[in-house]
Each structure stands twice: as structure tokens, then as C-alpha cells.
Image (cartoon, rainbow, N blue to C red; front, top):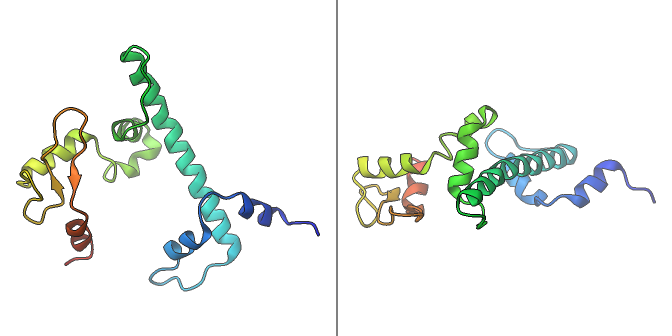
Length: 145
């Protein structure tokens, strides 16, 4: 039996189709054809590959300034890629530069722990430490609670 190109593509996907279906089927959308799911999943994979290749370029650039010591791609590399590529400008609010997150945390009055309403805690703001995110408060805020 010969497989169709779409079935072959679905077999090669790294993104689980069930997760894509849960993401797409929401609100007004009740059904999605399998062909559309496969194409959406493939597009998502291609987008993530593009984004990470761009961020990895910043990782390599940073490694040159550290005397060739290569480290894993970091949030800062990803934020630099988003900030430098106009095609990724729609991600600027989702992946802001690290200093903006820290400034916002201080502006919101976040202290050593989760602040009032506490999305971001500024306890670890020195060096390469990432701000901590209070996921319960962020989820409640996202759902208007």
C-alpha cells in the first residue's frame, strides 16, 4: 500500500497532533480536518526551527565574546532574536528583553517573593538569573480572576 504525501508528513512530525487539535479546537472552532491539523503542525515546527536558528546565531555571537565558550541558547538570545528581526515583531510582548521584565517587576512593586497580584518576582535579578514567574497568579490573571 502506498502512503499519501500527507500521511508521510504526519508520520514525520515532531509536534503531537493531539496537542495541535486541542489548541485549534477552541471557542468557535468545533472541528478541524486532519489535513489542516497536519499542515498547522508542520507550520509550527518550521516556525520554531526558524526562531531557534535565529536565537542560536546570538548564542554563537555571545560565545565569541566569551572566548569561544559556547553555552546553551538562553532566554536573552531568544529575546535578542525577536528584537532584531522585524518578522518576529509580533512576539515582542511575549518575549521582551530581560531588562524590561525586571523594570516592570520593580514598577509593579514585586519584592523578594511574589508581589501583589504577583506575576513576576524580582528576587533573582542579578547576573544571568531569570525572574521567577508565579504561574498560579499569572493563570488567574489571564482568565480574568
